[in-house]
Image 1 (tube, rainbow, N blue to C red):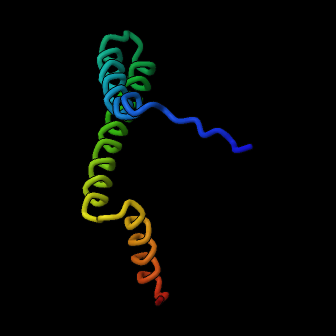
Image 2 (spheres, rainbow, N blue to C red):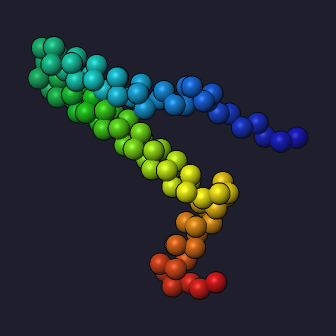
Image 3 (cartoon, rainbow, N blue to C red):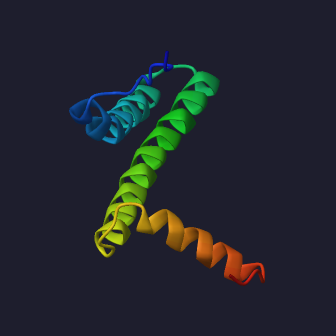
Length: 93
């Protein structure tokens, strides 16, 4: 019996970075409206981190898809990364 792989559906997976950024913007707005200085600072930093994290995830996915589209085989990317890493550390095939 195989262990079941739990994954998000594609629309949910694609929407997660946008959700992170929306929550981050909401946290930044909320931090502006909070009367307490310390709590406002904590919520503001969390909001900035969420916006930045969502943006980084979007850029990483875009770069990964662009790099993967340059190869004809889906597994070629992992092989290319392996050979680049092996060449970098001095291992020759």
